[in-house]
Image (cartoon, rainbow, N blue to C red; front, side):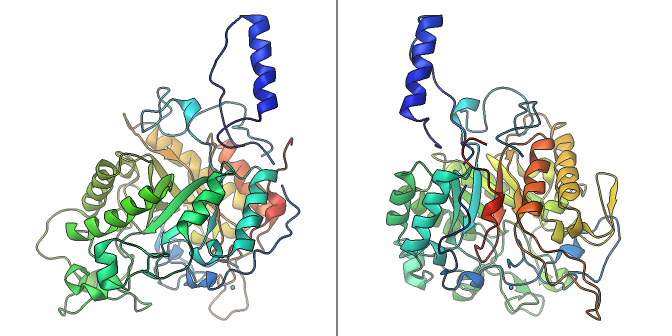
Length: 451
């Protein structure tokens, strides 16, 4: 499915090539086959799945147009936001590649035919700890277009999700047994499923308190905390980099196919109370240097980074969190902009289009965000990172007026998910990941084999 075509298909192709040209052994491109299940199966037994990303969105902060709103303007610092409380593999018929669109190699030097066109779902560590759940997701990959999963290595709770042997993790007791990575990876790999390990970087309420010398400091000298009372590691401190990269290296040794860094940024609120004295480096410079260092230290697998969707619209590092579109993809293999419609402010302008209530127009928001992205990075010579967006598969029930009488959201289901996927293709990209913190996905939206 993911890494190789069925034997019968290979045989037929070889026979055809022999008859036509006498040539044998030609490499056959592998991309995810369209496949679907009827949505049955036990995906609700996720333990504390809601433990990750249950805070509200700070989408309204990211509003370069100045069109603020009551909806979602909670001021919290969520990356993905909470989950629920195209036709076949197409690229609009143009076959355009991701990244800068130049050349035939990807960021790792591999030929275009060698990389996986990822169509994935995100799974928490708690979900990954259930045998019944994993059997369901393997079956889903066999019968739908899904060919990959993103699985937590370290969530924003601060804990590595399995028994780690990294000395610093062991010493500080910053791991928690959520799942068995060896068993999970073997099960997925035996079924040709690509596994991306998600590793939350600087938002870390555990290690930052175990090692307050590495935490962001408040101007009063104490450890700084955001509105949710969560402390963060200081991205300017390179010792924090080594802690994260040591965890990533262990994950690669276990067999993860890719490392995806999340919360690879500075906090989005309370900037006047954070103490970054002693450095004159820009935030985006520190973030870019961390990613370049990670790629240098972990050359064996692709390195990706999750970024706010609004940076595709905002010039430079407008949000002052260290994410600068033209620079953040310079040294890594993928960026995954979180183009969730719920994360845009009321009246947000994207690619010169105004969205009065963004959550009500999933296609328009995703398409225009990615079209603007493509235009911008297409002008950057040597831009390495391909673009693989995160799409919304959750209902943003918190998007209401202050009095609670007006809602600025809609129920998200198969139709809204499919609209976003089509927008990805129409914008010229091929890959996507669905996000729902509770892992209750709209599986009816996934294309069945042969469609």
